[in-house]
Image 1 (spheres, rainbow, N blue to C red):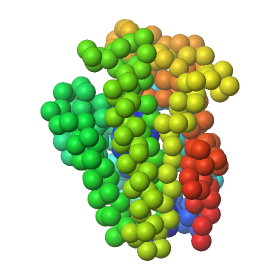
Image 2: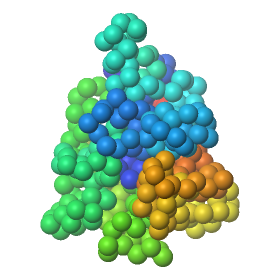
Image 3: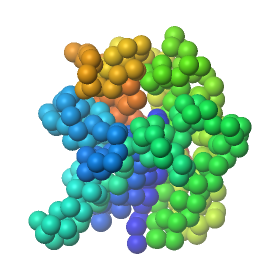
Length: 320
């Protein structure tokens, strides 16, 4: 039985971490490019890739398929728990299939794949975005409230399925301020001199519903403990007082090109890279820098109730 599920929905899109307690010491990760550790490198039919330089340059010193310059939140949480970083599922599956590995890793597996979303139709024909961003990018005809409720219903269904598989420790993380990502420059209706308020309003509606879902979990599912991670509030705090967190730029991508650095993917033809990625909130047009991920991870792992409630991830992981 899985003792702990962390369902992370940070910054951009739906992500899940299933994490065992300290006894089993394993993490199982589901999500999109925020947590992809290389699955898309093995998924040749997907155009969302980060298996080329300068991705991974600040920590691994080579591309790993992670859409940042180093480690992700999942990696930091693994390190806080004292376990090895998880391999991508497709990499582990290939090793098991060809006989180079007898079984799957005991520290867990990363199933995250760039371009995925909560809704089945998200990026079915277009890869590299998420449910909320796609609503504006593709001009979805559903009204905002209906769309948000549709996404929340799918999240609740996911939690239900995982509970039936034995998950008993659950943490749902909010979306961050998606309306502030540099790639909003691609949207005709989005401003570039400030965040896209309409998109962030949608995110706030979703996050409110998500926290309500968290509060209902322990009532609906006997023996289950649930935690809500307020990633939106965490990131907005970075944006409001960036110097306190070692940040100099909370608007532009460190690696990219065009308006806000949001028109060209890092590593693609014509890109430019800043000399100080740790001082940027965003690494590329869509994803945070390793420094930002580390700040988020610390706030969630052992933070106050203003950032993670009713208990921290460390407390959740320590539960018997």
